[in-house]
Length: 446
Figure 1 (cartoon, rainbow, N blue to C red):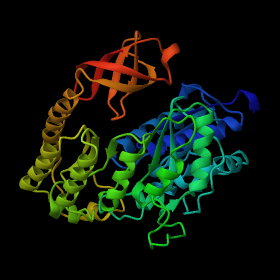
Figure 2: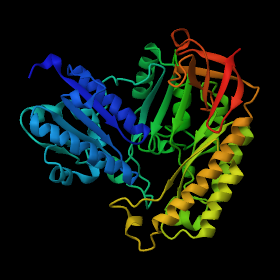
Figure 3: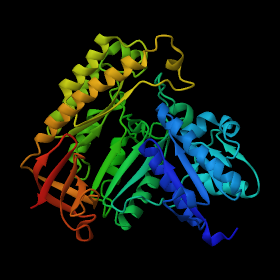
Figure 4: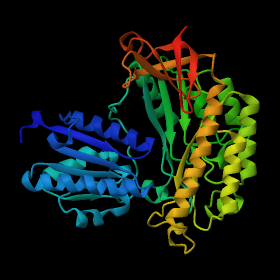
């Protein structure tokens, strides 16, 4: 096959970690002389980077795969790859279901894509899901945006939440060294990226597995220390981080966010449930009181901080009054944004085997009720921006109205305003907010 004409297409499901992995894999494919195409039908290599958090994501993967498998029967040169968490979880079962697949690879193998494809091109069908030590990554990711970039700082998760498949598919925690993270951020700053989001499945656990402690006996590599260490990277004007776990969220971290000018006043801290018995069944390791204290502390230091979170409704055994406790927490805290999901059982997790599962009707009823409240609270939170002047980092054109550009405030609110993308992309501009909606704002340049 003529090497120069090869095209690839990647479809990404799920979380930011997956987006970051997809960007790295795209970087590897481009080094291998593949060219990106938006059209899976015309690609020589199609890669699905999958997510197992919700059922429909998994079903989608199978329906996409079915179409490509038919294509492959006619064109044996097509290479089909499934990466990510479904690959990790299903492993060889995937090959049995879709024998046309060439490569099934778990998320820890993203950096090995070239070696694995080499084995495929040599005529093998490859399953790479065994836990391995992640190699320090030297490929430059192909970033989807030219303005904002993700940087992984810790892979895997040691928590064992009873509903979650992540520890099974992403392995145990492995922190990258501060030096490696700083080097990647410096490189991104040179390339003109203005905003970096530090990523981890459980980012507050960063550094626990790295050796070293301070004279006062504190561990010397924490997320807080890392923020101080990477803060002054030239060119980078904003730093964010996600996802936090309430169990490890410290006042020291909150103070650092207040002190460090580049760190945005936006915190994403999932609470999952507002009921202590459900939190216990979920094995989350904190109470709703502790969660509320964290939010209170953030608001003492930064009254205007934006708070977003994740919540699950319809967890096995959840009673109506326990669900009411989740609504009460949502009402009391007033989140700027809340990602909600009805519980869906994941294979290999304890909660999936319990016999107190709720019906789909109850789950979807609760989901609608919480979403209604989330919209009301988000709208209230948005109103505080009306008439204010906000700093917005311009990312892109507004696809629905091309006379407008879009970007985000430091609190991560999507903001639209009239402007020319050629002049403004990547710039931080002052915008006066003239209109507010639950999850976005409109304004004009001051």
